[in-house]
Structure formats: C-alpha cells, structure tokens
Image 1 (cartoon, rainbow, N blue to C red):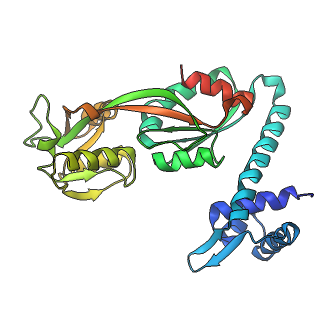
Image 2: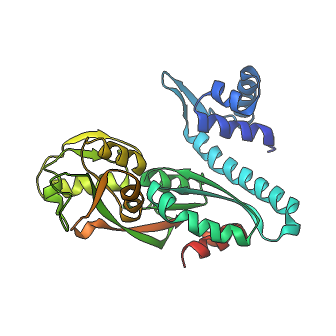
Image 3: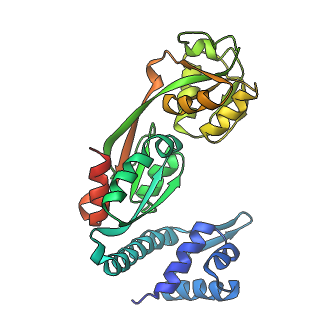
Length: 293
C-alpha cells in the first residue's frame, strides 16, 4: 500500500486545525483540493477518517491510528532533511517540546540556551500547554519531550525528574497579608483570588487545598500566565499564587508584595515524560539527557 506524502501532511494539518478550511489556509491550498485529497485517502484506505459534526471534524478510530503513524513519518522526514542539510554543522535536527508556563518562564530559557549554544543546527518547537495536554501530546507523538506536573502519566511513557519551584502569595502593596513573614493557605482563601488557568497543575493544587480545609474559593477571575496574575493583583483585584522566581521580577517593577506560602504543596516538582527514548532521534536523546541532569 503506497501513501502520498503530501496527502499525509495535509491530513495531519486537518487533524490539528479540525477544519478543512483552516487547514487549507495554513497549507496554502484550495479547500476543494484539500477535501479531494482527504476523500482519495479514505478511498485508498477503505476507511472513514473523519466524522462531520456541528462542532467540526472529529477523528474516527482509523483516523486516530493514521494520525499517529503520519506524525511519525512526518517527524522522521523532517529529521532526515534537517540532518542531511546541516550535517556539516555537527549535531542537528528538530525537537518538539510541550511544557507548562512555569517551566517555560523559569527553567527552559537557561537549559535550552545552554544546549542550543553547543549545537547550533538544532531547532526546537516549544508549545505551551496544561499538564494534561502535555502528557497526551507525548503519548500521541505530537511532542518528543513533555515537561509537566501533577497529573498521572499515561501507560507506556518514561518519566524523569526535572526541576522544582516554590509558590509564593502575591498581594497588592498595603494588603492585610503584605507585611506577613509567611501565610497559610487558609488565610489566603479569606480574600479574593486571582485564579490560575483552568486545568493547570496550579489549579489542581489550589482546588485540592481548598477541599482539604473545606473552604470555598472566591475566584474573582481566572487568567492565563503569571504576568497576567501580577497585573490583576497590582490592580487590587485579588491575591495570586506565582512561583518565587517570577515574583522577584514583579516585586521589582510593580506595586506588589511577595509573601512565602507556608504549605508543603507550595514546593512543586516538575517531571519530564517521553516515549521510548532509545528509539528517538539522537538529538532528542541528547537534549533529554541534558534536561534530566
């Protein structure tokens, strides 16, 4: 059975965009031509790849299977092209990383900077996502390396330790908690809280901590990103939880105060997840070793 590589690439684009029109626009092809490619692919496989629903396109079981293998093929072709074109520059290739905001803001800039300064031909695609999305992306081969926290990893993934951070409470200047040496979470929940992104590791920690002390959360608003939390806190819209390293930057430039959070769960451990790393391209294996040491 032969497969047309362009059709496979377009199929992956449709899966990621969940729309033929959006995929056609991103791939610079007429929607009718892309639709014909998908129909021909279904005829070739004698299987329906998508279900058309009011919400858009949904993959069928054969579609999920093809997506997994198509991503492997596309990754290997990209790797081959990169390695051949940049061979003279030493180690080369592309690594797809999914990570959460904390790792991207605090740790990855330094870690990737060190690695990429040694390997000039290496390219990295870095995608921010929640921990659940990260684990799923690695399991489905949408990412080579995932950096996550909190969630139970899927079967078949290898888990390695990464780094840790410590949460602090960010308050406006003059807030009742702002002059404290440290605070318990039970004291924090007495005030409006600028909540984290729904579904994030921090969100799960906050929800569990509130349930443990049987206290409702007053989530006045939710935002995505620690910079946004700081902006809302500075505007007196509540208090927020952010990593200590991030808080240092905000305290220096904004009218906010950082107060240590006196809870065991305030120290968070980050983990790396990968599929079978022994069969991964060399560049993925070396970056994995760099990140986990």
